[in-house]
Length: 146
Image 1 (cartoon, rainbow, N blue to C red):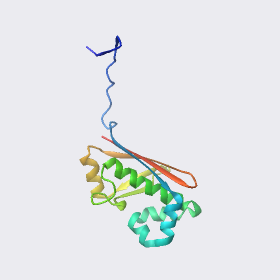
Image 2: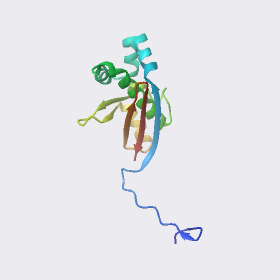
Image 3: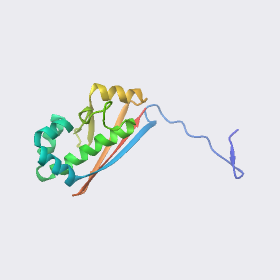
Image 4: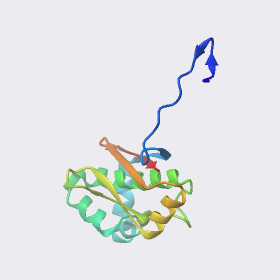
């Protein structure tokens, strides 16, 4: 028998197919100007510490839009770390998650072995990603699915 709420029977929750259960989410906003200034100030050392070689190449290929691309990828890494519940640090480094584009142009993660293990330890099998940006702000949301 289902419980009642104000005299109305509450229907049971629908069955959710395996692989579609949300395990965790993370979200982040980044200043495009802040990321640009950091890259211009610290150059290759900064890029190498924060971005994978594939990400850096992709962003640099975008001309003036590179700054928003770098900022969006920074936001994706922060959002991923928030979904992990660790933040950036000993368990998760910025270069443990790279963001490239699939054949349709959608952003997707490339994960280091350490990031893949952390994902699995949280009961997730994959991480979905959405990026957005304006000229001054980049945003990312990450959803871990079982």
